[in-house]
Image (cartoon, rainbow, N blue to C red; front, side, top):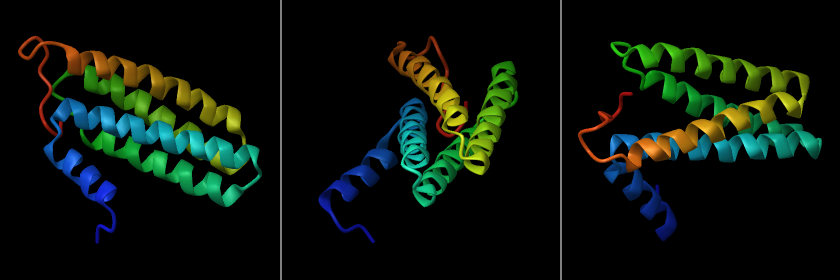
Length: 132
C-alpha cells in the first residue's frame, strides 16, 4: 500500500515511463543501492551493506531479464551484468568495498550511455519497452 504522495508519484513515474527511461531508472536505483552498500561496508554496518548490495544485485538481474538476445549487444551486456552481479556478491561475502566500487564505476558509465540513448531522436535507435 502506498503511504505518501511521493510513493504515489514514484509508482506513477514507473508505470508511465518509456522503455529507455525505465532502463535509466533501473541504473539509478542500482547505483543508489550500490553506494549505500559500500557505505555500509565502510561503516562496518554489515546488515546495511548486505541489504543494499542484494538490492543492487536484484536490479541488475532485472536488467539481465530485459535483454533481447536477437541483438548481439545483448550478449555483451549479459556478460557485463553477470560480472557485476558476481563482483557484488564477492564484495558482500568478503566485506570488500573495492569490489563494489568497481561495479559502481561500471554502472555510472552505463547510466551515462543509456541517458544518451534516451536523448537520441526516435527512430534512430530502437528501444522497446521491457527489452534491450
